[in-house]
Amino acid sequence: MLIKGYLDGPLVAGESLLDRPGFWSSHLLAMCGDGACAERPVPEWFGDDGADVDALSEVLFDPERWPVFRVPAEDGPGAVVIYRNLVGDYGTDYLLIHPDSSRAQRLAGRERAVPAIGLTWHELVRIADNPSAGAEGAQHKAVRLLLLLPLLADADLPEAARERITVALTATCAPQDTAATTAEHLLAHLERRPRHDPTWESPLSGGPTTGRRSGTP
Image 1 (cartoon, rainbow, N blue to C red):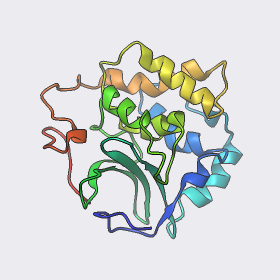
Image 2: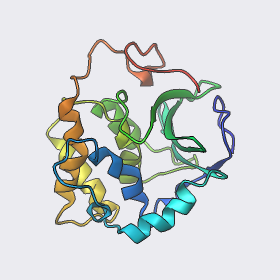
Image 3: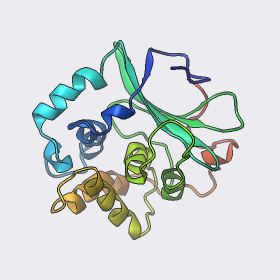
């Protein structure tokens, strides 16, 4: 697989892993472990167990095959999530793919933690709710939302945000009786961040991203 503007690593399509037990805890559990959560994060919050995570990690973090999760959008930029399994430099890269651009724009990277920059809730929902039926990649809105959730950097969330995340979690097999609490854990880190600066230009506009790290890897 080739992504214009991203030259690192042996990239392979990763969407087949989205339904594997252990994926969502592998992808999201780090958001709950930054000190904002009073409880120890566990895979069971996402409907997984430790054995699920261990089994999937052999595939998800294989340095010979870097899983790529594509989130194409019908109108405007889509996104790509890449598990950068470089030995000694593991992380997760998030790219914006502009339809009219020949190169991907690196929005943020996550190095075992939630990035300090990213998307507002409005930007996140815009991508999640506008799948491109004619493109390869994740099409389910709940899956798209959760794939990009680590990019959320907006402390000024609407009331509907927690409910939307709760519904997305249950749609991906998180226990219904604890999904709302899990959504709270996922969002707790935002309370410790500065409010989103309204003077920043949206990375989705294709313009400069003042106050954000941008560019290609």
